[in-house]
Image (cartoon, rainbow, N blue to C red; front, top):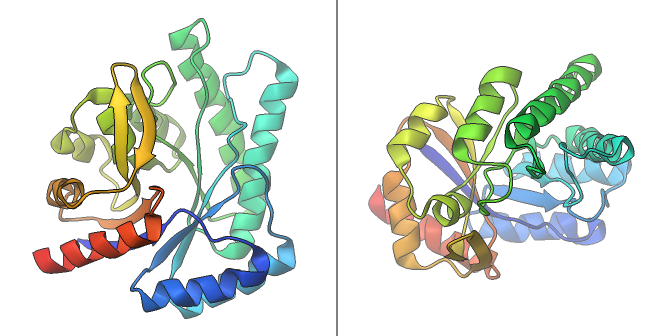
Length: 256
């Protein structure tokens, strides 16, 4: 197994290359660019930042907009959601990013119908991706609240039926399921490459409440549970994400 660690945030375009250099010095080999509120990088910035990341052997990924619901009953909202994903893909392709992570949507009144709507929207997006010749993966994320679409079974079914990628957020899986069955996750996601989110998390009966600093024992449980035959990119989303990445990498090195 090979693991790349990195934080969930690159910051502004004008300082991005310096940030990548500082991450590289700390041993980071991954970084997620937050397009959560807007696709803030221009085309020329994306080309420049992507070139620097490749020079430093840092794999980039993108977190797409928070304002996505592929189960929206309002057609305008649905089309806007799809456009936000495609806009992130377009700049992500220039960055050389591996994937665009996004929250798929909400159940609404019909849980079964929600799956079908989200699947059909992703199939449409996959068609556009193919037409454009993009390599960047669409990566719906496992979600941490029980009333939001995105269980491990739902995401695995999307991967099987659409050919899309995926983001396994193990903090979300813990918050939703109250425990992590690593063997089940391994069987549901047989692909060689895994894109993973992780952090400490506070949760209750209904799932995720908020992320927190990742403790040593939480890192140890994750790193011991992950399958040994994968290439894994771990993006940390805690409030102290760079420090947490350094700790995770140190623990991983100590285990190998």
